[in-house]
Every structure is written in structure tokens, then in C-alpha cells.
Length: 227
Image (tube, rainbow, N blue to C red):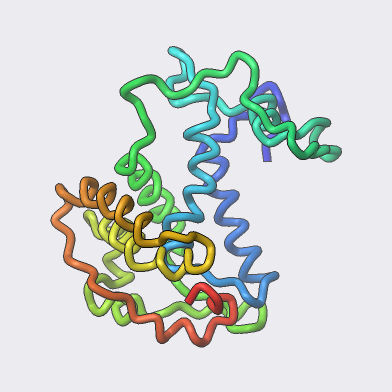
């Protein structure tokens, strides 16, 4: 997407459209594609925003960071040129002469939620919970209001603090299913998560999300296992 090493900067203006193209490719190529309520709305975008927000090389001139090809390739252990890349497992590393975010400019939860909302406003499909029903190009969305017991609806999810409220409370609702069998002490992990999200929720005046209705997930083969 940016073949010229002299001008490449893999910031969110590049990564977010790339994410949108991957989303569409998943619909067109993966019969089991499932955009999950928490994993799809919060975890998936983190995989894109973290690349730039954490890996960009910070400086006084570019406090948000510049993520050029040299830096990006070093983090992911890639050598070679565009069209002829080679990945060498185990050699991922922090690049030479690389600087992290400045103290006081940490990438916090509210900062991340701002990025989340900006991406969703540009590409509303990111908020479509649902998936293909066993064949490609059969993406079907769930009834968001039914999913959340009437607490949230898709039409207003990107308004005000609704998206932040859903993400923070959704973490508590969805993680136990996602982690089942993968983490020994789920209770201890959720206790830590509760303390973190409680602080972030304090100033948002969120409607309370008590439970999630997962019945609609039965139509999605890609939802099996975690739900």
C-alpha cells in the first residue's frame, strides 16, 4: 500500500482502510467469518491501532510517531523488498534508534476508544455484529437491541459514549466464554479487569449492560466454540 520506503508511514490513515478491505475479504472468502460482539468491535481494531500507536518511532518533530518500512520490518522480523519479503521466525526486535511514546502521552483506554470511534464513524460496517452463515457473501447481522437486552441499538451505538460503554461492559460479559479452557483462573483475571474498567466507566454514565443474549449466534458456524 506504500511501496516507496522514503515516504512510507503506516499510520491509521493507512491501517484503517486496510482493515476495511480485510473485513470485506473475509465476507467474500471465508464462509465461517464471524464478527463477534467484543472481539470484532474491540479486539480486532486493537490489532491495527496498536501497530501504529505503539510501534511508530516518536520524536519531538513527530510526537505521534512515524512508522516507516525499516521500523515496521524490524518489529515483525521481515527482510527483503516489497514483493520479495522474507520472515525469519524468532528475530522480531525493537529497531535501532527507536523511541517510545513520551511520558504523559501514554496510549490509555480513553485514547484507544477515541480511535475506535473514529474508525467506526468512517467505516460503520465495523460495528456490524454477525457473520457468514456457512457460505461466502452471506453476511447476516444480529439484532443488536435483542443482543443487549434493549440497552443498546446499532443505530445509536456510535453516538455519545455508547460505544465506549458497550466495549467496557462487553469485556466483562464476553471474556469468560472466550477464555474458557485457555486460562486457568478466569475469576482472578476478571477481577483485575473489573477494577480497570470500573475506573474507565466512572465518568461515562453508562446504561447498565446486565447480560448478553447469545441465541442469535446459533446461525453462525464461525461463532461455535467461544459461544
